[in-house]
Length: 145
Image 1 (tube, rainbow, N blue to C red):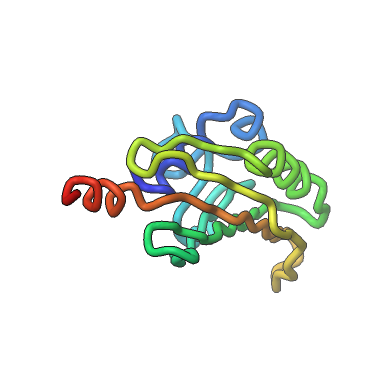
Image 2 (image 1 turned 90 degrees about the horizontal axis):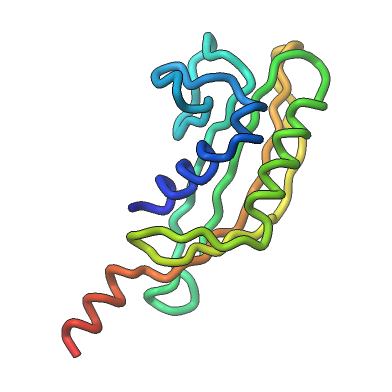
């Protein structure tokens, strides 16, 4: 299972986070968490996940980040901050197990409000550091040994 799929499953399985988000536009049984920018008619609040793939200080270590853009309706940032707080509770200094990659460590990096051209949309960004070992590379090396 990929890192982004593992993160999606972790987020979508959390009942507290689900209570804060709208239903997914294509799969109503899931919360509104998307892996690409949503169209204008998507119900809010929702999250867009963006994952960066970067190598760590050794070949098999991945030291990347995931950015979560939170979109809520209205002029108040309270709902966006509530979602941000729940994401921090879930992912700051946490370890999530992925069947494909093994343990994935997540650490809070930063967050903040991003100005949107629309007056009735709040856009809040939160970023987490994501560290894991490339299990497929490690397994390939072990099989050759």
